Image (cartoon, rainbow, N blue to C red; front, side, top):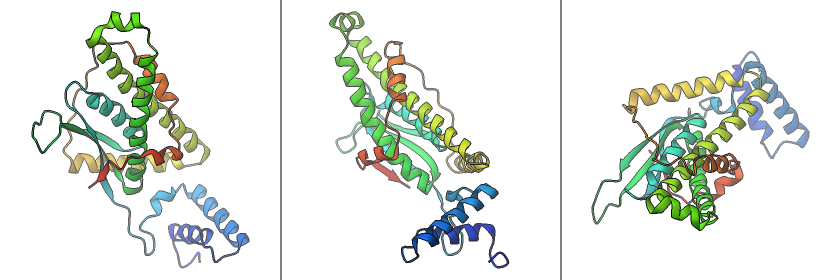
Length: 254
């Protein structure tokens, strides 16, 4: 096999054998061990194996999660946090603003967008939908527990700004948690840091060439109240794969 196939093809062969239900358990275990040994030795991430043999190379695509609402809603602030989440996942996050559109057939909304490899975009759609739901639940619980004096002191506008800041910082906290988990995982696999860096760089280069993105300033609200609480709630968010089941099907890809 060493003479006929490249390292990537050998790894792909062992991975297929490790998942072959027709093989014995001993054969699957041995194949998985061989694949892991080769991946560690050559610092090849499993996601980079697309395109080997008969498989088609994974493409870079754009995913979108729609958040309905215009001015006076939480859509813009939810977007800020979730773009940070997309970036923490190794994608290139940005947004499309349709909040000022007024039509009977077109509701104001913001699209949270993220460019990346197909499998990463699929993960991000589930993750972001889950975190959007978690952010709203956490914000409502936090605000409900505020004293009547605090709500009176902040007033209607101040309370709205505080809730916006909570939601925005929830995303920032969740992004930090995802980044920490990613760094721990990378540290456990020799050489994977280089692979993930190259993967992210390829995505950012593709985005720069194909999307024509410009940097947009995203200013904070006028309230610092709720900022630390939102960040702390985001740090405690469910960012495991189990949370992907909370996706509400609003994600689209192109």
